[in-house]
Amino acid sequence: MVIKMLSFKSYLIHFIKSNRISFILLCLCPFIVITLPTISLYSQPRDMINILLLTTFGYGFLLSIALPIFQFRFLFNKSATGTYFALPIKRNKLFLFEYFLGYLLLTIPLFIQFFISYSFFLINNPFTPNITRIPLIYATLLLIFLSVQYTITTLFTVKSNNIFDCLVFNLFELAAPIAFIIILQYFIQTQIYTIIGGDIGIYVDEVLNLSLIHKVLTFPLMFASLVDSMMQNIFLYTEFSSPITLSYQFNIFCYWFIIGCICFFFAYRHFLKRTAEDSQQKSTTLLGYPFLITFILVCSLLCIKFNSFIFLFIILIFCCYFILLSISMRKIYVTIKHVILFICLTLCSLGFQYCFQSTNGFHLIHEYPDVKQIQSIEVEIRIDSYPVEQYLYLFDHETDEEIYSYRFQSISPSEFPYILQTQSTISNKAVNNKNNSNQTYVIPDSQYTLHFIYTMKDNSTVYRYYYISSSQKQILKDFISTIQQDYDITVQLN
Image 1 (spheres, one colour):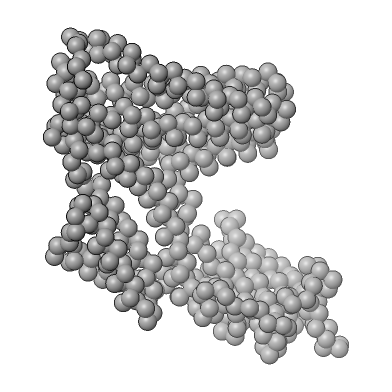
Image 2 (spheres, rainbow, N blue to C red; image 1 turned 60 degrees about the vertical axis):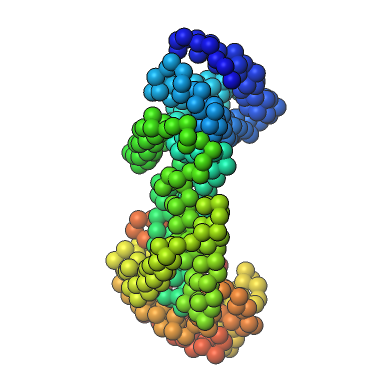
C-alpha cells in the first residue's frame, strides 16, 4: 500500500475517503437497529421506552468492542504496521487519531438516533409522567459506559500481535468476570452444604454481597441494573430521583471511570513501544495467555471436592492445563516451572478449602441468625404430602389427629432465644437435607416441613427449613404447646 501524504490533515482526509463505505454503514445501522424497533411499538409507552433503552445499550456495547479492533487492525499485519509507523506522523498523534475517531464513530450516530427515537416517543406519549429527564440521564450513563468498554477493548487490541489473539483476549475479558462469579457462587454454596451438612436455606447472598461483586467485576451488568432501577423509578413512582445521585452508584461509576483511565494509559504507552516486527507474532503480554490459563486453572481447582475422586479430577485438570499451554505456545510445551506452578496452585486451593470449612467460611456462615439482629420471626409447619390451604392447625389436641398447616409470627425479643433453641433441636433431628448436598432427596409421605423466616433489623430476610419425619412428631407437639401456653403467640391462617 502506497500512501502519499505530507501532513496529518492529509492523512485524515485519506482515511475518511478510504473508509467512507464503513462510515456510511455506521451511520445507517443505528437507524435500523434502534429507531425502527422503537417506532413499531409506539402504542405501548413502557414497551417502547424499554426497547429504545435496550437496543441503544446493546448496539453501543457491541460496537464498543468491534470498533477498536477495526481502528487498530493494521497492527495485525507486519507490512501494514511498518507502513503506518513510517508515516510522517508522530506515534502519539496516530494513536489518538485512531482512538478518538473510532470513539466518535461509536457515539455520534448512536446518540443522534437515540434522541430522534426519543423525540418520536414524546410526540406519541406527551403525558407519560417523569419521562422528560430520561435522555440526559441515560445519555450520560451510556457515554461513561461506552467510554470505559471502548478503552478496555482498545487495551487488549493494542496488546495483541495477531487477530486470533485479539479475539481471544477480548472474549476472555468479557467472559472471565461472569465465569468467576459463577464459580465463586458454586464454591461458596458447595462449602455451605459441607459445613452445615445439607441444604437448609442458606444461600450465597448471606455470605457475600453478590450485587456489589457483580457491579465491581462486570460493568455491563452494573449498567443494565442501573437502567432497570431508573425504569422502576419512572414507571412506579410519581417523583423520579436519578440513581446517579446516590453515592453508592456514583462511587461504582467513579471506580470504573478510573479503570478506564488506567486502561487508556497502558494502551497509549504500549502503542508507542510497538514495532512492526511484533505483528503476526505470538502475543506475549501477561494480560493474555498467562493470565487466561492461570485463571482457568484456579477456577477449575476451586470446583474440586474432597472425595474419593479427587486425584482423578486433579489429573484431568492437569491434562487440560497442558493442552491450554500447548495451544498458547503453538506447540507441545510444558516445563518444570509450569509443573511447579500447578502443584503450588493445587495445594493452595485445597488448603484454602480446608481453612474455609474449618472456620465456617471465615465465620461468615451461620445456621442460626444473631438474636440481637432479629426483628421478627415467622414459623410455618405443614405436611407437604397433603393440601395445606384447607386446614389451620397441625394437631387436634382432643383427637390427636393430624391437621396440615400451622403458622405464627413472633415479634417479641423474649421469645427469640426459645425459638432459636428449638431450631437447634430440630436441626439435629431433621431427616431432610442433612448430608444431602446434591438436593436429590425425595420427601416421603407424612413428613413435616418446618420453615423459619427471620426478618432482620436491616430489613433483610433469612430463611431456614427442615424436614421432620412423622416419628419425630413429638418435637413439634412440644414446640407448639410451649408457644401457645407460655408465649401466647397468635395462630394465623396459612
